[in-house]
Length: 355
Image (tube, rainbow, N blue to C red):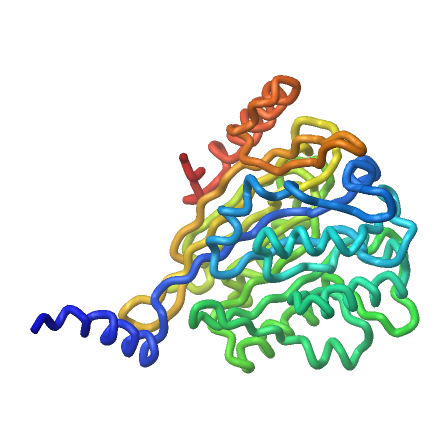
């Protein structure tokens, strides 16, 4: 009798003893809802995001864990776009259906609807059992939630999320926003390790809007995060892409660091070629014979948003090179050309995933 049936049994037992050797993560940029997007999704009194993410769902759902920056409150009506965002709960449903697991909420628009809007956003995430970090209903909620350790295919990852500010609006009524504060970040990283995190991912809202290269403040903060042993730094806020690096940590040469300065916009209604799209980062974690986890590789895809029409068609996010619509093909090509210029010149060991 063949013993081939024993192979999956031994493989399964090995994973139980030693843990899985690989895990795949996906990160995207800013998920926004401008007024034109809301108008296109509105169906009477309801909102329908059917088709929004169908084209990129296979890239997201294939990951073991997918992360998105939720750059809008999800509160009670009226819903609105810039400058004070507020999206309907159906937007969360569409993102969850696309395959996103973790929603980042620390960004400059998180207080657009005040403390009430922040709490309502958390409530809408919680009722859907969607993981989130970056903002909290009160100090007790933060104490219970941070450090946030997620077991991703047997890799224990600590996720942290911070923002440079909240557009001059201060937290009130006890709500908590995690702002960029070096002593606080150092404590959170240390506490994450004490709680069992093998890898630390810091997602940070930073930088200058519409600039394709990081500023000095981003570089200084990235160096600080590298010095305290952070494994992945994932940036957002500029609304355009910025370079990515995968290299040995200069302070801890036995481990790699992934540094993504900005993934740009995941979905928005911004108008320029640079802001109409963004990047999806696909990250592979690996555990070698020494059982130490590491960031093994990273690649990117370029994404582009096609606008919809109120009452008839929704916005759609797709691979930039897949745009066939004659009205948008040239703009998608221009976005891709400019993004590739930056990535080809400045990226370190993070290539484009070619189809």
